[in-house]
Image (cartoon, rainbow, N blue to C red):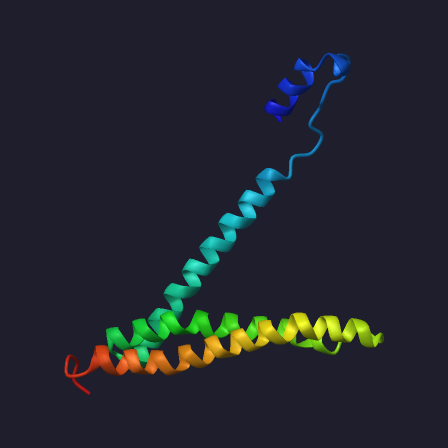
Length: 133
């Protein structure tokens, strides 16, 4: 706001103009972002503790907790993009939306497939002969 005020005062064409802040949403946005980060952090910690309580193996719990956000985010994004293929009554619009949705869905599902293959592989490699069964 201060930068904008200086630019307005420097411009002779806007000599009589002034600004007044009526409502500042910046504090609410920053507070919401801070609350979201805190909730995500506490959720991750609690998820880690619950999984560790059942598995009682630190490495396995760490691998599972790293894998959960990957698979959840991927599936959520696929569900969001899937209706793009079926949107619109116009065949041209359906074709255009399919051209947007199919590559995104294909890439995300391929990414999920790779994650589901390599996460168990990493689990097998990192936990082999280092922790008792």
